[in-house]
Image 1 (cartoon, chains in turn purple, cyan):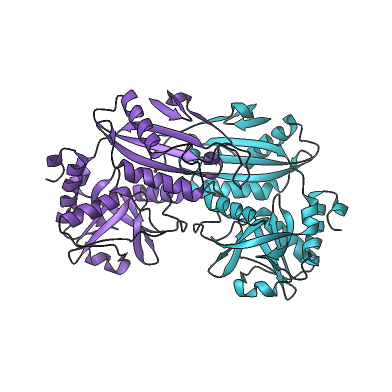
Image 2: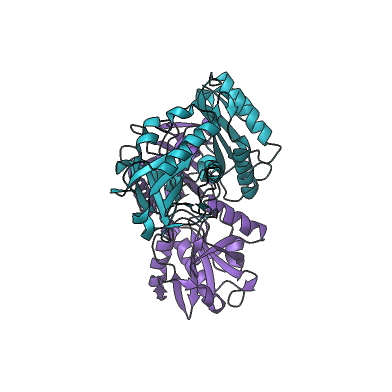
Length: 288
Length: 288
């Protein structure tokens, strides 16, 4: 597999980072995961804007290091060179504040580290159609969850706890409200209304979350960007996750209790179908 | 400079980490910084216990990877081989959850990455004697600040904001109380009583913090492990930082306002002197 590291396309086994990289020492970096379908980046503008925003807010790199156009060009070259230009794939991009002696303050005149890689992706359709279970956990993350940084240890630990509970995802509760999953956004249906936590410092404003809100409105669903409170969980008619690789993933059981009738609901399945059409994927496989 | 990486002593320039190291991708690791004075680790038990606790809580490695004895032996070899066995130095140790394809869940059968390095250290005595300024910032970190992980981006950003404000450190306020600094613990004196935030999930229980509490009690100071509230800041007689390399660092100005009479106070200076004696450093240089 060929990856991109600081301007060079090299075999992954040769992609090595000095121990003084601030990604390794501090988690001082941002990342983005994008879908590449038939050799083209999907939702490239949304993902590019997310990465640009993280770089700007944390002052990591700038247009001289990676532009949206550069992100697209490198991604498409990685897809092509790795034989991924025909099917479905993901592209991972990470920028860190570069290599410098270990001091917390930002180093001066230090070029960022830019790493990108591509991998084949295959959607687990049986999970989408059948639903999965989730658990709830306290959301103990920092107060800038809107930044897509590699400080992901709380997310890692939450996902591991979900796995050990036999669940697909951990859904996080902060101050009595569902914020998001450990690596997904969360939507619920209550009284026929689609709800998801509002964009704020407490969630990642996921690209797929935005796409789904648009698709839901096109389908004449009522969308309310407002919290789902813990007390409302037993009134949920549907619950589902969204994300670049999670797409629309119905949750049919939460903390061991069925959601709605315990099967994927009509809103989730309609949005899964609509998303597949929007992505140009074979829609008929999605929702049956 | 010779460093230690996964069982080998190699030149730092050759110490390279695969891009799939979970330290780089997730900040999924713990670290420790210890002082090495005249070739011996200082407070080795406290630092070793801290590292063991982080490894145990996050399930990174175990005794087969690094024991307290191993930490000491590698440290002392690094000090010796790098010509640091005569003077004052620091030893940095970092363990990550190893190299594995990027998935949040813990990889199975993956050996941790163990990295250690040593560097010369020289205490900035003029700062200790003269005092420095600090700013306050909201403590936006996660709720497990007791773990010494490499998810340090909030600390990095806080330290950078302090630097840009012309200050030495950012002192963090959570729910109206001073918790700690971006890389230090914080002590204050109010009504003659020494106060510091209690050990909890909101602070790192620093080794030097513990040492200073013991030294303060030996000196018959009243120590109260209780928060200093924001409303009490203008009543502070003294304010100082503690840490492995920060030692005892008086803060003489906070957010532009003098603390006490604007000079390092008697409690801080007595503790600095006592710490230097305890470390076996030349005490007479500390407190005059």
